[in-house]
Length: 287
Image 1: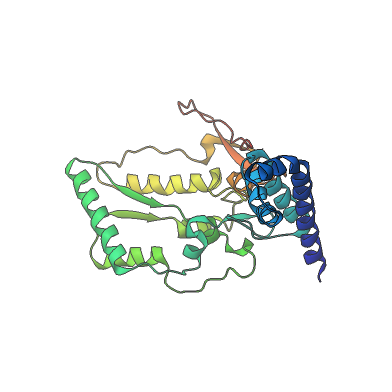
Image 2 (image 1 turned 90 degrees about the horizontal axis):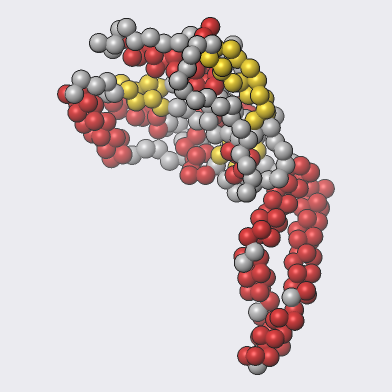
C-alpha cells in the first residue's frame, strides 16, 4: 500500500470511528425504538446503516464538518486533485468540473448541426429585431480558464476530440452569412497572456480585472467601428491605478474546505470620477 493510500485509509477509519462513537452515545434511543416496536436483534443490526444516515443527514452541521474535514485533509496532506466539482491543477489553480465544463474543454461532445442551426436562428432573429430599432448587438464569448491556461491543468485532462464547439459555431455563422457580430476573445487573451500578469483568477471561475479590461478594450473597438458609434469614448490603462489585494474565489467555497486558500489579485482603481460602485472583491463567507 502506498503512503497516499495508507493516509487515505486512515482518515476514513477516523470518520468511521467518530460515527461509531456517535452511534454508541445515541444507542439508548435506538433501544427504546426497539422495545416500542418489538424488534428482534437482527432487525436492530439491519437498522444501523439507516440510523447512521439519519443521524448525519438530520444534522447539517455535522455532515458539513465531516465533508470539510475530509477535503481539508485530502488537499493539505494527500495532494488530492479531484473533488466533487473541483479539479486541483498545478501551482494553486482550481478548475470547475460541474455542468460538463471539462467535457467542453476536451471536445468530448461535439455540437450538433441542429444545435448550430438553432443558435444561428436565435441570434439572427434577435439581431434583426434590434437593428430595426437602431440598436447594436454584440455577442461576447468569454473563454473558460482552461482554454486560456491549459498548462496548469493536471495530467489526464488532455483534449480527446478535434471538434471545438466555438470553432464550429464561428464557421457555421460565416458559412451561412450570419450578420450577428460575435466577439471571440480567445486570440486576444492568448496574445495578452504572453506579456501580462495572469488574466484569470486561480481560485475563481472568472477572469480577473486584467482579463476583463482586455475584453473591455475589444468591445470598445467593436463599438467604435460600428456605424453611428464612431465617437464612443473608452478608457485606457492610464485611467486606472492597479493595486493588488488578497482574494479567495468561488472554487474554494465549492470544494468546500475550511482551509485559507488565497491569491493576490489585481484591483483597478479609477483615477476619474466614477458612478460605478466598485468594492474590492472580498473572500466568500463560509456557511
